[in-house]
Image (cartoon, rainbow, N blue to C red; front, top):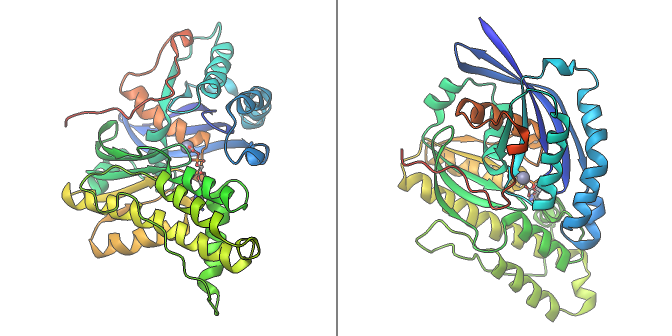
Length: 364
Ligand code: KG4
Ligand code: ZN
């Protein structure tokens, strides 16, 4: 008989306050599929725009203010007594923000006996693919594993091997800025606004369509040819800064220049992400590539990976664009599997944040 498990999930690790409910349909201890019951998000992007990035104290204040409202919206059509499990992001992320979510769960569960699951945000970005592909856990294992996973967002750029759900091997990560951070910071240098990824992507598209091109720019692809799976994006940011500072103000503000720069920045970031991911997939004989995180919404990244994966006869999983950026549903998905691994706590006071939380490593 199919059992339905309802998970209430809360995500406050960065600048999005997200609450949602997902239903896990389980048959004989095995996940058959997830169904999203509600998925509410309140984004603070506009508030942080003036800082060109997320300002932690402000983010915390906003989470505190917004959580009860987002919670209300996410639960308004649902009988809360049907919740079996509560999930909350424990890390990585901004510590004051993580604690807002944890404290909210602690208060909500006081005097209540529901188990609470601390969730790894990076793992959740990859498991968000369960929301796109209606697939059971056994079929997922059989079709896609072992996989090489790339979690790429404003806060993280992590490449890891996925041997099983919950069994990972870290391959590499950024040594400085994350890929999304590089989009955001270079967009700020160019005076484009925040978040930078979608703005740069849109301008790059216009450059591709532009008939008359009088500008040629060339930016570095940091660590592209190094024999490791690490990334570094701060060098690209600095190269953009120095190049931009040297330009005459009229040119630096021109549409053609901003399009050319956006195109080159996006291409440089995508070149590095794709090359390292493909190298890992080939060296480790992976069956598939799985991506997730805000930057996985990038059209060029998606298109390029599609082409190269097809060439290499690799399967490719990318979240629906709606589930690339931070959301509560992906936290619910990760919590379902974490709970099966025995990671739930019975006393919510035992929940802790870990702003540098790593993905769970396992040798097999
Ligand atoms: O996953 P996410 O919502 O938050 C973090 O966990 O960091 O990712 C946000 C990041 C931002 O840096 C934003 O610029 C980037 O994702 N992003 C994009 C695109 N959409 C969002 N980057 C490139 N292209 C996009 N279309
Ligand atoms: Zn994220």
